[in-house]
Image (cartoon, rainbow, N blue to C red; front, side, top):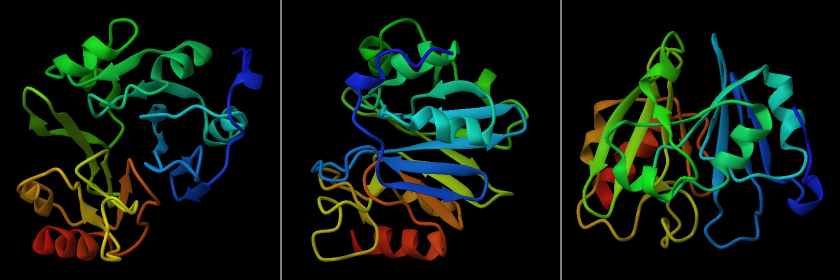
Length: 207
């Protein structure tokens, strides 16, 4: 694996280690506060919606060998291709995510092939002409990854809520209420690492 081009990337900041993974916000001063995650699984490390940064590879190697890069939302192609190429792995995306595939540099692999034996399952949340989003859920581990529908950055939580629904959604994503995760890994803002199910219900009920 080459770390060429590290000087062109921002220095990694805002890193949180949690059981079976690591989350980071590459630029905490950035208004959207784009968050990314690496999930340690039995088949290797899955890097989700990554924003690249200098120092990232050290955190990934601490978790294990990178097995793939996952894109869960059509606007979250971010630095997926660059991270995947550096680790010589594929970018994985749900097969139905046409908008996301158009925005990606290169052809993605079907996400299902990356999740086999990992404990995570992919579930479609939105598939419209202008919004495609999937969530990852590992019910046994109590982990849910929600890239866009809910978040904790100020744009999602104008009244100081812990977790909020994306401001452009006319209706809350009630399907998320089917799960009761301990932790919710979001794509914008700091993730929630305990009592995630309670925070999720509050967000859905007050949206």
